[in-house]
Image 1 (cartoon, helix red, strand yellow):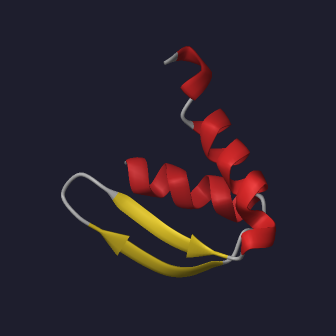
Image 2 (cartoon, one colour; image 1 turned 90 degrees about the vertical axis):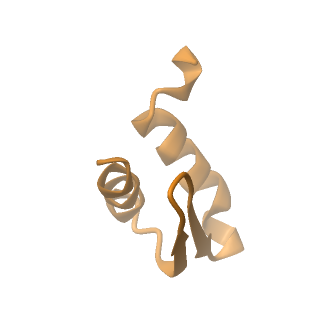
Length: 52
């Protein structure tokens, strides 16, 4: 599902997740600031957000 794709994308870039929270419609993670741009780009690519 969506969570598995998200976690796989972050793991592939060696982004360490410190905290995970979820709801019925949202997944949030806390990561080190130094990985922010890398994580955003990885998720953007994984979910093909340029097509949105």
